[in-house]
Length: 267
Image 1: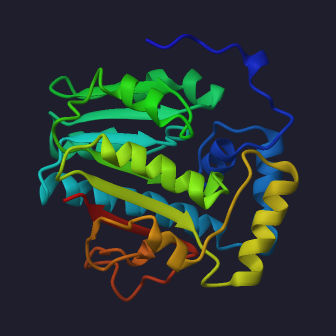
Image 2: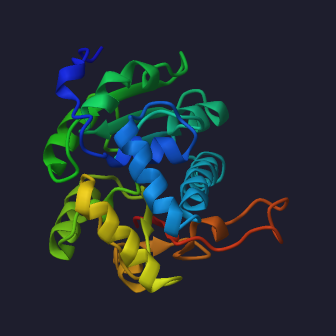
């Protein structure tokens, strides 16, 4: 089990992405500074909560598809964030109890809550790696203790690539991670976009980057689609997370959010 993280090592004076996102999702693992930042952004971009909820619903639908339709039984979820509801292992193991999930994050508060993430099914496995997206070799080495990288893996990058500003660095990270995964693996990405409301998307980024951590980058839909270069995009391609294969009961009541997502297969 991972060690406990002393409260003193968690900086409660600076708003942090994982805690703000937790607040928008209705969680309790956040501090006044996070709630203040969350409310500041919501004051001029009230749809941000819709973004957060749509991103979580996108996770549920993509994991369900990968398990039920593609036969995926292994997941590498980088940028886990704080546990709330419908976490990757809960969704995957409810459909396939033998699913194996490795979570990766570098936030001390997430590490402190890792025990909650490690309660998976008896038949499967759930593990947690303390590492940064910018160190793919360390991630792969640690993940190989739980996942069989010679078999297909779903690489989950939900709301995390946007914290790497340099496009060349993003490409290098993706290439290294994908090169280590077997054919038949999948890449799942969600990312904030400025295609729906360019001005307010950058207003959110500016407000976030003035005080929050890590720093946020907003990309266009075309830029997000390029993250899947060399892979086979599943229909309907890179779209608003809320529009990626919505459930029949959602059709008609779904509206686009400024968070785009896609799923692609490695040949």
